Image 1 (cartoon, one colour):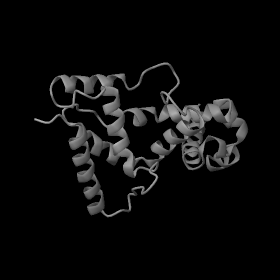
Image 2 (cartoon, rainbow, N blue to C red):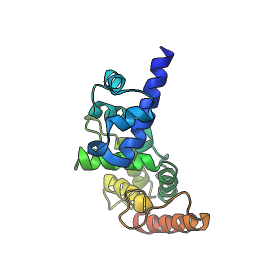
Image 3 (tube, rainbow, N blue to C red):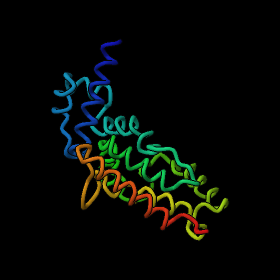
Length: 191
């Protein structure tokens, strides 16, 4: 049984790399099986199909996608910079979510499981609005979406410039400061 668990783990790791790099349509099960030192029959036995394997990979990374950083409604700039760091540390998660958005769910919730995964964060933003920390003229769901989008400015999904771990720390610090300032000016309630 330990060999089966180890094989399943290798398949998930190899599939994470493959799907992050090539998306669902572009991923090749032959490459996944070879990278996992396994075979297609084992992969299909565990996951049923390539789509089933992608679902398993996405589910495994779900917590990082949805909860990459803790949200403190009184500190939206801090949340945005924590997301920047999480996206920098786990670029594959951003790529997986982007592929899921592009190839599966072009609109609406990223996870089509009927659960509103953003509801707890939206409630946190709404409470921060009631406490006077966040601009109350904005819809709390829109505030959350704006903060996440701003934090993704330099993510692997960026159209202009994607941050990389190899970038100088001074550049990361400059981006964090700019991001925090932009979030503060755009969304934090003024005194």
